[in-house]
Image 1 (cartoon, rainbow, N blue to C red):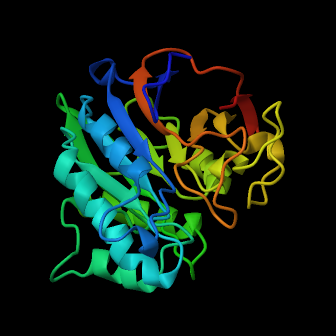
Image 2 (cartoon, rainbow, N blue to C red):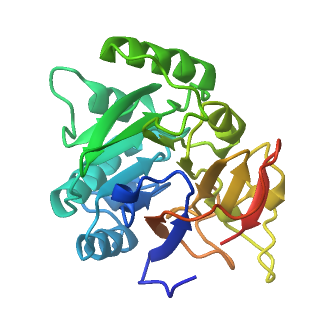
Length: 289
């Protein structure tokens, strides 16, 4: 792994289906910042530092995978962080996001207000997909919707993705079709990896676990707020031919500290290479952060 750049942790990721024109695509991934009301009117120093560091890098995409607050009255702090982020960080292809289990109605409704979205620079994916292009190469960018009252529904995403192709007037290609667009999925919850594999997703970017937040000295998490086994708490995972990167995230929950588990924001550079490991019918960890 390359050296970390402050809060940013670079990783080169090999994906065998990556079109040659997408070689070197750079994706900044921000997950679980958990800004709090007590941080008003400005986010905590860690999040300011993150924004400064992201702004110093060339990004093609910026993706956000949830938890822009912790409690309902954190909405103002969360929106302040998001506005500052998009004001400073200007990815070439745009900023896209999904919500997490600590995103409450005041924040979610403000962001999704069709008449006056609170942060219009962010495209929110609510169990749907958008198609973007880079060097005349299509990328299908999908998002699983979740909030503090709504668990992820990968089945609804699959149905909406089929409808997305109907609206395009195209036939939805099979997951293993070599000519289909590159598929990138955003989800707060990493447990959707098996469903992502069924959809033929090439890469899932996710968070939620905080890397365990508190670990033993040999990097073993004590828990991960998830039904996932502890071995799947962070890092690069594989299910079938789908890769998943599970971020350690940036903030904390319950106990305002991290032990042997530093916050980070992955900076993912895509490479046209073989994916580590072998095709499997279960989720396996290839390496961990």
